[in-house]
Length: 119
Image (cartoon, helix red, strand yellow):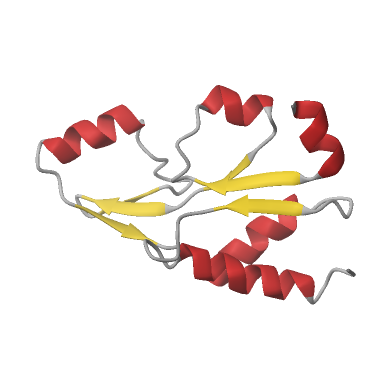
């Protein structure tokens, strides 16, 4: 599968994708890191990377309050632009538009990128 994605198209996802790290790495799938706030700290940034999922969900079950944040269109654009290489089609998987504004941010970003990339 790695050979197929390297030759035909690029796949990207956001950090809500429930895919093992090994799978992402083996298949060269880039992840757009979404941020969240917990205990007044923003996670998913270079300064505060996300916690392992097991820790995050254990703390949620224990009553920890969190707040999620959608990616903004400019950050989504920069992410897509970075991974749109050699004219290969890019497929990005994200949450449903009914669950998150992240979908809309990536649609805006894709439209911005289309203006720069020939068909």
